[in-house]
Every structure is written in structure tokens, then in C-alpha cells.
Image (cartoon, rainbow, N blue to C red; front, side, top):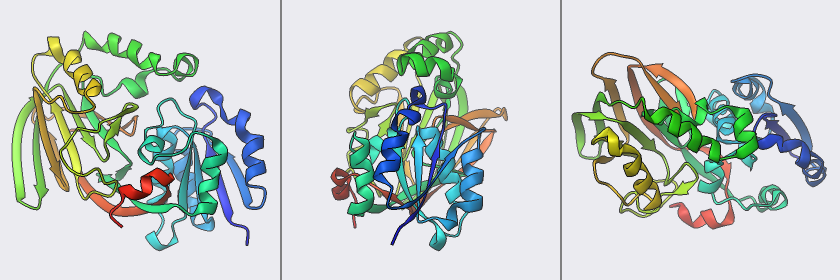
Length: 311
């Protein structure tokens, strides 16, 4: 029996690659009931999935991490038992979620995951009334991914982010943030000044596998959120970030390290902060509430990722 599939693509994502792959994708899915939808504006994918998603068996997110984020937020508006499965066709600039889930590189092999049925339940993080697939950040450099012009990313790829970082560096500043977190040991509260706060669902960020970010088994359904808070002198801030990335998350000087299931984050000065959610400016607020939703949505994963789940 043919499956009903909704493919949503961002026509502005990843050097406008979709048109080059469209015929091949249609050929690979010719036995299924395929509907292709091009997003027309920000949040369009969210509205499309929320209103029509339950009518499909599978939704394919075709684009980058921002497209996947929009699709996920639409999916979360559907009752859990009615949600379709998700598949990613990574045509963005960085494609962290596809890397996290160990997707193969070729389109044919990615589409082949449908026949193989390699589906697992992945975590989602709720942030106020929005949902995060893999990263939440605020502070210096956290705006790079959404302030970098799409047309520049389409031309030079990841190099565009480096150029944007150089522009931002001269204006970096620290913010006093109070973090009240909850884990198996109860509530903990701490107030410090940070140049950058990173909340990570998985051990990957900015196209880099952060293998050594914590000394725990690397399961993709771990029941916690990871925090890295960067402080210290702003003159050496970029050096600390580079060492953190180049050491695959092992470098930890001038950093707060923590894991938790729920947390309240408050700007002590009461000033509203920009929050980067999955690469986009998703919130502007002085206070946010985080909560991990364990094994919340069904997603096709690469065969190499199957051993990274506890079930």
C-alpha cells in the first residue's frame, strides 16, 4: 500500500539545491503518494504541518536545520498518536540534525531509509511555547547563523559564518544570567556573567561532532540537556570558542558545565535577550523555561545511529 508523503522544501536553502534533486527524488518515491510543497515565507512550514500533517504517513524536511525546526514545531501541534514520521533530506549549509542522526550522504540511500524502516524516537526540548530540535543559545556569536545573509551562504557556504563572526567580535559583551536547573539531585541555582550560553540536546554543533563534551555514553535518547556557559575575558573569547570546537568539546577552561532535565533562565538586568533556536532567532525574552521531552517524535535515522539508542 502506497504511503502518503508530504515533502516540504525551502527554495532558499543550501545554494538552491532542491531543483537539481527533484526529478531523482520523484523517481525514487514514484510508488508513494507524494506531495511537494515549497515554503513561501518564514514559519510557513510550521503552519503547513500543523494544519495538514496528520493526513500523511511521512513528512520529509528538505533543506537545512531551520527547515527541520519549522517542521518539528508544526508536528508538535498534532496529537502525539496522530503524528507522522519525519525524514530529513539535508540540503542546508551545516545540516547538524542529519549529522547527529548519522544520515548517509547520497539522496538514494536517504530515501532508502523508508523501506528499511530505521525509525527511532528522538528528544525534543520545549522552550516557553516553542520546540528545539538540537541547540539553544544566547550571547555573543549566537546570532551568526541567522544574521548571515542567505545569498552569501549560498555562494560561499560555511565561510560566510566566519566573516560574520569577525564583524560581531568588536561588540561582544557579557550578561549576568541566573540559571535554576532541576535534575535527579533536585533544584540548583547559580548566577554568573556569560559571554555565550549553549544548551545542547546532542553532541554536535556548528558542523562539529563534540565527542568529548561530557564523560557519559553518547546515546541519542539521553534524558538530559547539556549546558556550556562561556565566561572569562572577552579579549580571549574567540580563542576559547575555537579551542572548544577543535578539541571536540573537551576544552573546558572558563566554562560552566552542567546537565539537567528542566531549567529556568533569567537575565538579571531584566533586558530581553535574543535566543538562537536551531540556527534562527526564535525568541526575544528576558526569561525562558526549558523542559526536555524524552523520546517525543519518530524520525528515520541512519543505520549507524541505531546503536546509539537505549531501546
